[in-house]
Image (cartoon, rainbow, N blue to C red; front, side, top):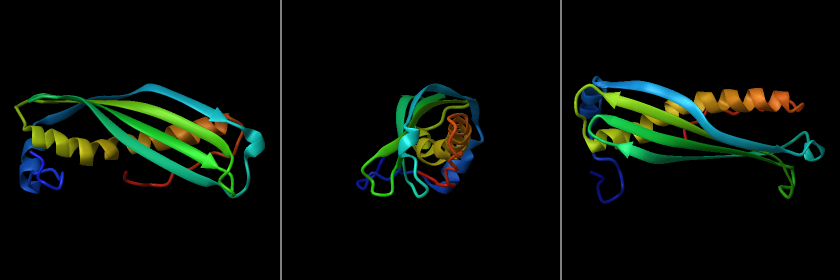
Length: 143
């Protein structure tokens, strides 16, 4: 259960113990879109990153969520957008033994970003290179 401060109520020991029973089934791209206006591309850009998780299934032995990423590149004066990339990644995991709902909440908050951010970073780098603009390197970050 979550406590009064909306923090997940599971000890690190409990999490490690239950994680032993969990296996990642798959990570896959579910949806995405992009926009680029090469005329607005400038040398110094401001990159804004957004990340959100939508839990679709959190059961004793199954977990499924959608990790939603958004990158926006704005011109120096922040009044013109030159690029936007949206990407949804699905994460599915299962447990060989029953695990608690608190475990899945902690998994969603701590593990899913670690699993999905590299996919998004590579997607942005590859896609921007194919757009004919200098590839954007999304920094290492934990949402």
